[in-house]
Length: 269
Length: 269
Image (cartoon, rainbow over the protein chains, first blue to last red):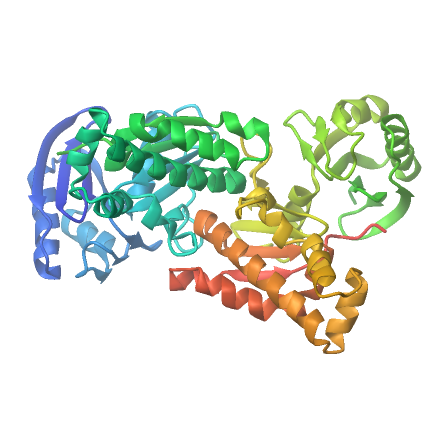
């Protein structure tokens, strides 16, 4: 059996786990600290806690952008991040193979290699969460792009960033407009009970996501698009509006059949 | 020396050539016939004319869409095309290796393998001609996509097809609006002489293309984008508006430096 350490560093929490490719054998979840020093200490301590002499390497997914050398350049949700040589720091400390990449890329790779996109040549993993991000996997390999920014479709102009219309933020903003409490869990619950405005919020959201899917398909023509991230759990409320809008924007009928799946990233917490 | 036959089948002409990878040794150009029977005859006759016993294979680029088996499904500009098993027909006749692909894909592959994008990992070839098309090459291999439709960015909704705003058609339509003769050569000539409205047409065109480039970069983050097609020859008139608009729509500063080139497809005629 082959073991590895996986770390997910997000805006609210750091989750580290010792995994064998199927199960999480040991795990540690801590709140994401606000200062650079405390952040690095929390990351290293979490890895140290779950690490084992049997683990072959350490894979780290971070919110925000990285470069090809594993430097964590910045993160919208963790302002203290600025050019942290994370790969080098972790490598020096633990003396193992270390990979650092964007969390959406990690999600896409996981789904393409051993998840819903297992037998597909080109998989696009789209995260619909607090923000909107994505990753591209072709022939089981990540397509990182020239600046490690491939798949960052949330930044498409619509005319301002399309992320604003395809993320949890959109749900909250529309709720405020409808004079509802901007609480995603509440809105989801209300939609489940058939509340009209809550349903409408998800339909508008679905229309926007459908348009974004059509762009991805028109550029890449992937075999499969896999949705992840917290908001994607409300798939049942937005999928029909999403599909309708996607097809409306796809000129080639063949592409209407692009496989779609909704999967959550392997949860460490 | 290794020889091959290359064929470019467009809406107005069929051009076939015997090539050695650098030069065209023998060539044949005929008008594209309007009926299926005459079209096939013209294609086979042209290949026959330039073919040599030394040629190792036949590569055919067609206007329109193909599938993975080399069937020519359809073409906007050649209405008689409907599911022509072109690869099989040519293979049976000449008993050589035959490849059939979309012309924009051929352009991208040529530029990525031996043209402006020679040392780049991910190249996007964008054709700005009568229509707008494209092709994606990663590690010197075409990324055809699930339905052989990767790179067909002209079909992106803007809200109707962005092709309408990034092709020769846009230039002509705007000329009509400005009460100018909708002749692309004339408009280009007038722009060269500093004619205000002609310049304005290219600037508006450049803004649209810049937006399209930003979408391509936000999805793929290619190392290089290479522009081809007739309209791209007016690069000098639209490039500054294009770059300005592209950068305006790119959130990540790193991507502003995406390499750009303007190249013509190897001309057989």
